[in-house]
Length: 252
Image (tube, rainbow, N blue to C red; front, side):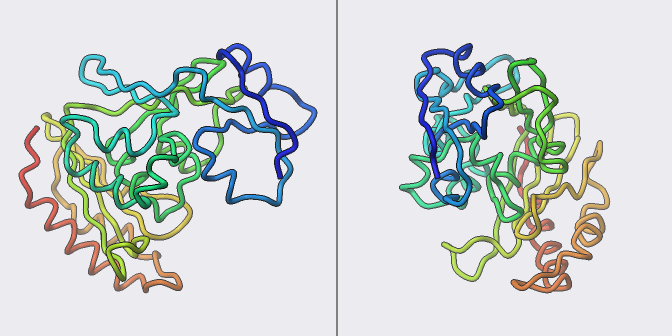
C-alpha cells in the first residue's frame, strides 16, 4: 500500500526524500513492481522529472538511463538482435512501455531473460549518492546496494561485445524453463549466463576464450531442478542451446 507520493524536481531532492528514516521510501520508475506488491506500506518517489531516461554512447559503452523503458531500449537503432530478443522475451508489449531498465534489473528473478542478457554483457549499475559502481553480478548475488547508496541513475553495457541469446519455454509467451546468453569481446573473452530458474540469473563461464563451454554449462545447471523442470533436463537443453549459440557468428 502506498502511504505517500512524492515527485521531486531534481536528484538532490529525490535523494533527500529517499534518505528519510521515518518509513520505507522506494524509487518509482515504471511502477510495475510496486503495483504487484500491495502488502507492504511504502512511500514512493516518482523519478519521472529527473531526466534519467537517456541513451548515450560514451566510447565503447552505452549508458542507459535508469528510467529508460524496456521498449525504448528495444527499438534503439543498431541494437544487436540478441539483446532485442531478450528484452522482447522479458514481458509483453504493453508492459515494455511501462517497465524501466533499472526496475527490471532490481526486481529480476532467475527467470528474467533481460537480466540474463545483461549479466552476460557484464553490466554495471551506477548508484547515488556515493557515485559507486556495482557489477550486476554482485547485485544478483547479494541483492544489496552499496552502503549508503539508494538510487540507480544509469546502467552501463559494452558496445564492443556481441551477444547471442535464446530461450526455451512451454510456449513462446511463457517465462523460460531455460534461457542462455553468450557475450563475446574482440579479445576473445567469453561470458555465458543462464536463467529460467532460481532467484537470479547465473554466470556459467567468464574466460579469455570459449573453451569448455558445454562442461561449464552442465556444471552450472547440476542443481537447477525445480517444479518446472529437472536439473537433468536443463543440463541437456542448456548444453544444446549453448552449442547452437556458440556456433553463431559472434564477431563484433
